[in-house]
Length: 163
Image (cartoon, rainbow, N blue to C red):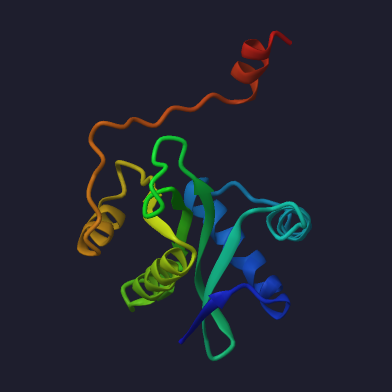
């Protein structure tokens, strides 16, 4: 298995994985493939994107991916802690799960984080994702119990902005 940053040759298969990811979060809600491809090329892989897409490939087939970005801490100025890696998404196609692909992706992300001076990797997981939670804990990850996740969406954003 080859793990590395998304290549142009993998982009069409990456569209397939993004469609599968969308179906994972929104079962039955169909997206237009062209819309997803344009989002991948213009935004996720666009010149201003800080996201890095890490893929796992075997025999020319993409099996899964991780989406990461690096940030500097506002509260940790010490050199060993000032840079952080954020895992935005980890996804392995359903028929390739439990085959070590998620582990291979996370190992690559860990090496990338260390190579780029990161003192930690942070991510969130749905509280209902027992399988994901068990996987992350098997890596040595610990629940950050003093943090909660909040979200506002377009309507609330407009109200907050006074629109």
